[in-house]
Image 1 (cartoon, one colour):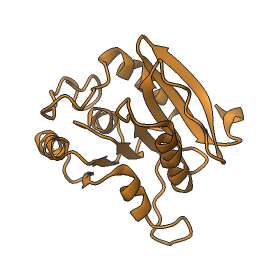
Image 2: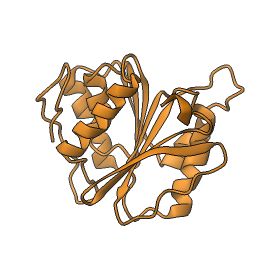
Image 3: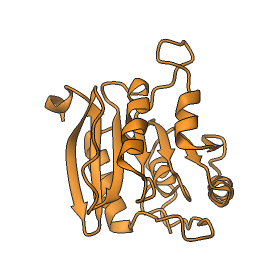
Image 4: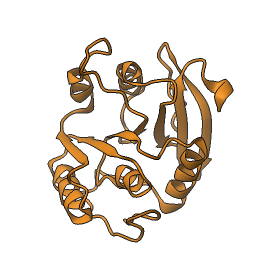
Length: 195
């Protein structure tokens, strides 16, 4: 797996051992980031990469101008790969790696009314395909309080999977299918007029 554009174009990423990760194909990644470029959200973005694996999406975002990425994964081999990739790219100062279950991580974030609360400009959510629909909706529900009106959540799923069920306050504003992969762009409800 490699970074396809930006400051670290061509850099190869260390991948976790085992068969539990499913890197995003280059053509899907290129289309995804072309759309994000069009929305103007990448420069200086605060990014959250859930189910990060090797960090292909988060590191691609950093290569293209994102300021900070929080990587979350519960697999120890993924955590090792994420830390090795951050070190290899010289991005360990702006890449925070969290060894955690995604729901536990989100539950541990300060509540929106807390002065320490975090807001993410871009959230990548590329869960293992078998993750149940209820879990996907629960994660999206927890995310809603950490978004603002410009934030975009990208959910990558198998094309044969149903469209993610939106919790109150979120809506899908764009969806695209690439062969076996479907990408859903999600935002706070009521923002579709601006995109």
